[in-house]
Amino acid sequence: MPDWRGNNRLDSLRNIVADGRVSLMFMVPGSNTVVRVNGTAFLTDDADLRARFEKKGRQPATVIVIEIAEIYTQCARALMRAGTWAGVDESGALPTVGEILAEMTSGEEGGAAYDQDWGPRAAKTMW
Picture 1 (spheres, rainbow, N blue to C red):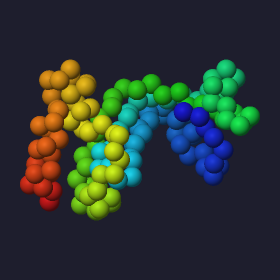
Picture 2: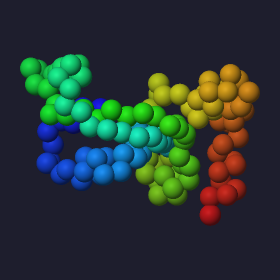
Picture 3: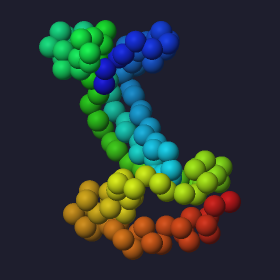
C-alpha cells in the first residue's frame, strides 16, 4: 500500500514500526458489507517497489507491505442501527457476504440462502 503524501500524520507508520500488527477495514458507500483484513506489515523505501506505484511522475515516499493473516466480514448491525447508508445498497457490482463465503468454502457455506436469510436474522438480534 503506497504511503502517499497526506496530512503528515505519522501515527500509523510509527505504530507499524513499533508493533507491526495492522487491521484494515473496507467500506463502500451504500453497502452494509464491511470487509476486515488483519495481518502484519513493515515499511520499505525500496526503489523498485515504490516505482510500481508511480502516478503522474511521482512516487510514494515509502510502501507499506502487508502480509494478510485473516480476512472476514465485520458485523453489519452497527451500520444498520445507525442507518449509515439508510439501508440502501447501491454498490451494485460488489459480491454479497453469501457469495464471499461460498467462494471461500467452495460452496459449502454461504450462498444465496445465507444472503436471503440475513435480513430477518439480523432483525431478530439487532438490539
